[in-house]
Length: 469
Image 1 (cartoon, rainbow, N blue to C red):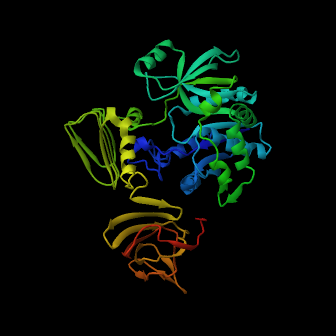
Image 2 (cartoon, rainbow, N blue to C red; image 1 turned 120 degrees about the vertical axis):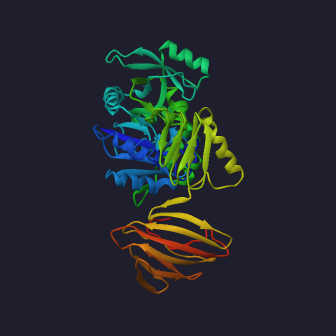
Image 3 (cartoon, helix red, strand yellow; image 1 turned 90 degrees about the horizontal axis):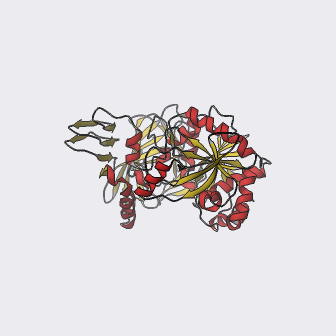
């Protein structure tokens, strides 16, 4: 049996401002109507696989659960208390399999934010690698390079394995090269891009990890000794995992094992690591432009323009990336987009919030959009999903007015409980215990006007919460 393990812990800083720490690129519909996480899950449908295991962090748990629910694809969701890179994350999944007496099952480890255009070639490669993984080898996917890329690590192919003309022993892993070295790799025909996708038995991975990085092995083993189910999630020992060293699977295991093999994969793969990479794989108009949203373009060529909320027009420009969100605008030459992470670093340094989350913030019960704010007021557009409810809560520093614009709200205010319908409103005084629910079949939408001396999100005292926050 194959156990899909989807790693969903990345932050996607190079795709800012669309990708934010609390809503990174794997949860965005960058290449289709489905998000990248959903595309990764759907990619498994024609393979003989078991229930997927998604490894993610605490902040993303409800996003993962909701996006998998939308696909009607149940998944186990294992929560990392802190990020420790891929070697420990995969170890958690392997220990879970061993604890369920499935140590000889094969883990198919995938990143949640990759594009694979040719699903059939991917499926064939998985089936081709399966017997090698079942026999104890640690397998990876080497991507046939299409250019001398300097943004990827490379794998050097060794001897072909007799049973297959496209499966090779791994002769070595190399770091991201400079342009001249990358060209020499491409010319030699011996090197492939390192995809970051893997296949191996759970017990074999743990054996190799214990041999080469016993410190990581022991921390992950201890962290998984006591797991706690929490709604749709699996929690591990936070203290034990926090003590785990940080390392990638490449450094910790794959570069050291003597049993590494790889299959060559030519399937339109991309890790969508920058806006220029997204421009590369998207359909373009006759002038080489890629547009998403309400865009007008005149005498502009080879540009990537994305807008979510308003009209963006370009005139007489070339090779630009323009990404407009509700609270931030990026304009860059396509050759400089790898440095977007420097902008993100400066935002953090200045103590701003635009790297952390969008103006529109998603919650397990729905979302809110901070429409306007001033010194003693804030206006939000709140959407509550059918059947969902906010926590029973109170605030020490703010009062709230709620005006329902669509649907019907069930409101708890102190000892009262009452319904508020479209075009009706209610008032929550400072310090009053309250709750908002949507008992209907359609989204509940309301305008919330907050007023008070402090309007931060940390002025929420939760007394009861369906979602265990």
